[in-house]
Amino acid sequence: MTNLKIAILTISDRGAAGTSEDRSGPLLRQIVQNQMPAWEVAQQTITPDEYDRIRQTLLQWCEAGIHLILTTGGTGFAPRDVTPEATKSVIERETPGITEALRAESMKITRHAMLSRAVAGIRGQTLIINLPGNPKAVRENMELLLPVLPHALALLNELPDTEQQHRTV
Image (tube, rainbow, N blue to C red; front, side, top):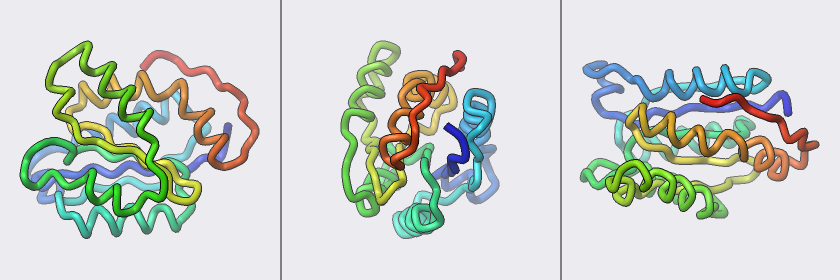
């Protein structure tokens, strides 16, 4: 499946302020470019853990025709972790199977996975998936997601599904 536009949003107060290096956003970009080279990473940015900024970015990207938005960070218990709430305010239909699968698989690795409040859902023809902020967890989650994303995006956008195979992340 070609010509799909992907956006990556890192949610991090320290990353947005430049006091901490964003490792998860660049890792997501690398994974997408290596595993799905026909897909275009059309947008990538960092925003602080601010509900309105997250929400506005997601809405702009949906309106711009992005097919898949991957967020990283802001899904835990910290008071400023508002990524799930901002995402829920944007999506029209939840896709709980995605986050259930990610948590179930992650629970095999760490019990802390049960603390994830990540959500996933659809707005128009855009699929939005919240991922953890930890690079190791991002890699593990993407290993599970990559085989199903081409089919999901083909269904969502009424495109031919080539059942494209992926390499191991």
